[in-house]
Length: 621
Image (cartoon, rainbow, N blue to C red; front, top):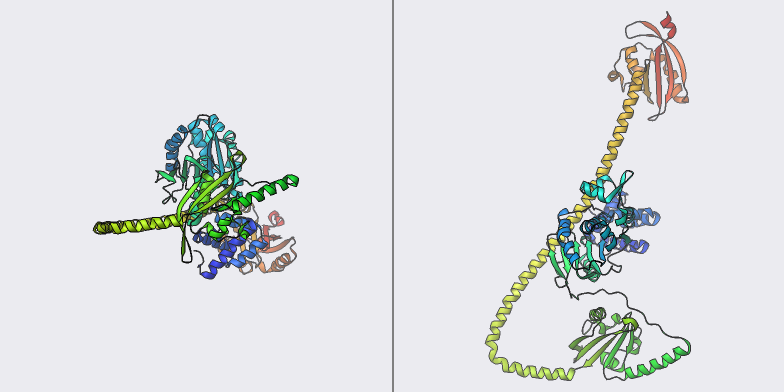
């Protein structure tokens, strides 16, 4: 369970995220806070830290901890053809339809966003190779595979996988697309060269363009709604018209039907609509260059004359360069819109006129992207008690080569005409009084429609809440699967170590059993740790009767107290000694002379090994 997120804990978490972004360039601020908090707290628990400030101190002093933290946050759970039913739909329905829309020699562009350790892009390569053949796939298909996790990308670039990783593939597919490489298998080199890996942050970096297929499975669910919206905007820009988008089972596009149509909702396959223009992302425009020297002076004079003409124009005009910076504000714009010459050089988005009385920034983006003039008629603007009306014209300007270099925005004052239209409208409304009863009926119908609309909105809200819960459950499932894989690895290591330990124990027992002399191992506190077969035959005591007992308190035919000084000296000096001859009584009651050898024992904090055997001179007698 994650730590409680009170206001103080939330603030500390946000400060930690800002530090991570500034220190390493990883921006996790768009991720869902519940998931982030849970994963960061798991890593803090692993290293024994209980507060975000203390964990930040650890990150500052131990740069290796960043890698461990990123591996904890970025749950890399993947496999070849994960969710086989969805991949089957992709292979048998989507890919054939995609191929029919392309010329036989046209390149096929695919993007695997959030590719983790590479199983997904290699699955895509196999799928297209099955549809086109290996040689045709290697010639036409280009797959871009991106992730923010550098460690996962290094593993993906190697193209090496264990036999366990390939268990999901049919045997004939493993043999066709993988080559044995020591204890692992490497992906087919001809297809590997068509997969391009690179680090990419889908929330910040420019998207790959002109795609036929974009695969981003179980990645969006880690982001909040705002970040998901920005990512989908980039995906829409990246896809060509009629290009396909393949999401994870916990993700869907509920409120984007204008730009994407559903191919299969169950398997989360969508298609970009032809002619959709809901794009809000676009690449940076080209900057203009200026001359120097005499040529620069001539240009400056021409620019001054141009500015005078523009400034005297009858229509309010604002011009922006390719970066969105204000470069022209003419006289009418200053008079009617309240701008000043000091606004020249400022970003247009910082000016009030960019969003009031109408949102112009998105219209400018649309005009730039579509390269066409946009018009907004009769926009109302209030200045105190005065009301103004403008027709606004947004015109993209292109330079050499058809590149976008600037945008001109003109405001035509239509206040008088609008007031006249308002008067006509008022008279018309008076003439329509006779239709009040009909209007009343219409209003009742509209009320009913609004109630129905309200019910629909409530259902949509409930659906979105269920979707959010589903995403959380899927995230938790990913975490559990990751933890289960770690436990399986640890269990395998423990089994190997146990087998090695059992083998060593069996070996030692066999050695001790094979020694004819009596061997007794004493611990540092002089208790019996081992009692071999020779000791049993010599003294008649079983091992289970003496193990753990004090050696010098045992009652058998050897007078152990005579040996105590030698044992203690051996413990102290850690040197071998003996033999020491001692008169003793064997297990059958026969007097013998027993030679005892003493050797220090270094394992488990030290001890002494006693080797006892009947004196040879005794045997001779």
